Each structure stands twice: as C-alpha cells, then as structure tokens.
Length: 345
Image 1 (cartoon, helix red, strand yellow):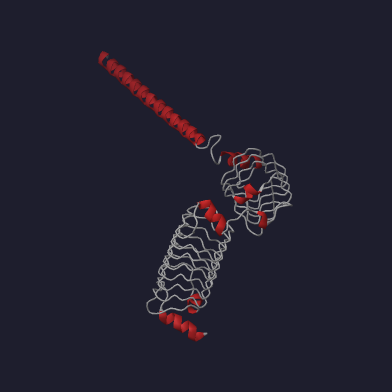
Image 2 (image 1 turned 30 degrees about the horizontal axis):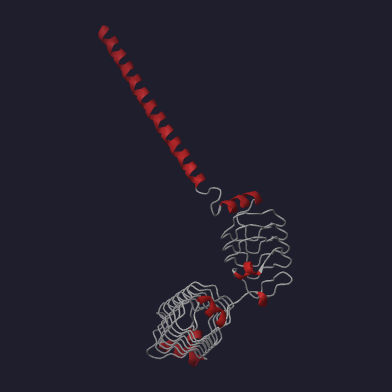
C-alpha cells in the first residue's frame, strides 16, 4: 500500500515538473517571437526617417490616400521646403502650389501643370520639365531653369522664352574651360543642353557623361572623342565627323545623324531609338547591344559593322541599309533573308 502511494506521488511530481518545464519553454518562445517582431517593426519604421529621401513622398501619399503621385491633384497645396527629390510627379496638377524652398532635384515633372506655382528658391537641378506648363509661375529665375531638363514644349512664364535661357556656344565653352582651342577639350559631365557648336573643331575631346540634349553639333569635328554615357537626346549631329569616336552607353534617342561619319566608332549599348541615320557612314563601327528601335537606316553604310546582339532591329530596316559580307549581322538575320526581302519588294 505504501509502495503504491509512493509511486503515485512520484508520478504526480514528475508530471508537474514536465508541465512546468514545457510552460516555461512556451513562454520563452512566445517572448522571443514577440521581441523579434518588435525589433522587425522597429527596423521597418527606421527604414525611412524624417529628412530621408522618400520620407516626404510617403507622407504625402498617405495624406492624399494614393499609391503614386504621378498625375496627383496637388492644387494650391502648401509644399514649402518639402523634399521630393527624385519623385515621379509626371502630369501632376500643381496649379497655385507653394513650392518655395522645395527640393525637386531630379524630380519628374514632365507634362505637369505648375501654372501660378511659387518656385521661390526651389531646387530644380536636373528636374524634368519637358512639356511642363510653367505659365504664370512666380519667382522663377533663368538660373533655376538653366540647370533643369526642358524642351521646346515647356511653357515658360511671361517674360521668359526658350531663347532667353543661357546656352553654351564655342566661345563660351572655351571661356568656361579656360582654353583657346577646343581640340582635346575636357568637358566631362558639363551641362551643355541646347548649346550651339555648329562646325566646332573638337577632335580628341572628352564629353563623357556631358548633357548635350538638343545641342547643335552639325558639321562639327568630334573624331576620336570620348562621348561615353553622354546625353545626346534630340541632338543635331548632321554631317558631324565622329570617326573612331567612343560613344558607349550614350543616349542618341531621336538624334539627327544624317550623313554623319561614324566610321570605326564604338557604339556598344548606345540608344539610337528613333534616330535619323539616313546616309550615315558606319563602316566597321561596333554597334553590339545598341538599340535601333524605329531608327531610320535608309542608305546607311554598315559595311564591316558589328550588329551582333543589336536590339529592336527589323528586316525592313536592314534591307534599306548597305551591308556586305564583312557585316556581322544579328543572330536571327541572314544575308539570304535580306536579299529575299529586297526581292519580294
């Protein structure tokens, strides 16, 4: 009898110890999970803090109840000293908005409506103002527009015209660089948008990462020059000498390259979408990885050119160009197919 009672006692004690141990482990696990979740939440909250790029954007989106500020209605909103650097505000309505002191560096305001907006001391460096309506904008000065990205569709306030904005020419560029001749000039990273360099002699020069948007470079000599990653969007390079020039990664969208001489030029990864290359010379040029979407290749001399891995080129485009047995065609196009396409026409 005593033995049975002892056994029952030991079983009860053992069960109690096991239960307590499991309970303690469960509590410990729950506490650890809870602590981990709290840390995770804190980390997520710490991802964007006041003053960080993107903080004001998220705050403004929550305030408006929208997922994106592109096309948003911000009419007469008080946005003084706000930091919207790099934010997409394309087609947004900012009529009468107070943007004084705001940081809009690299912000996309393409085709936005800023009529009557206050832009006093607003940072517009690299801001995309293409097609933007700035009619009636207050406290906007030429020095602000000069560092922004604009085009002929941009509507400026009364008293400011496209021609008023300071632009570089040959003499001003020489003065800025402190040189007497432009041969071998070092203009890396310079803002030269819509500049007039027609007929300029600039061989062996460096325009690496320079912004030459809309610049007039017709009849200019840029042979053996470095134009790596340069922005030549809508630039006029008609009859320009670009022999053996390095243009890797350059933006030549909608550029005019009619009759330009690009013999031996390095054009790897260049964006030539929508460019006019009629009668241009690209003998032995390297176009590997270039984008030729909608490019006009009528009578372009591609003899000996390297077209491997070229993007968005069609049989119709190539059939209009001049090629020979030395031309390295894209992997999916053969000389026989080109000839057949010509015969079918």
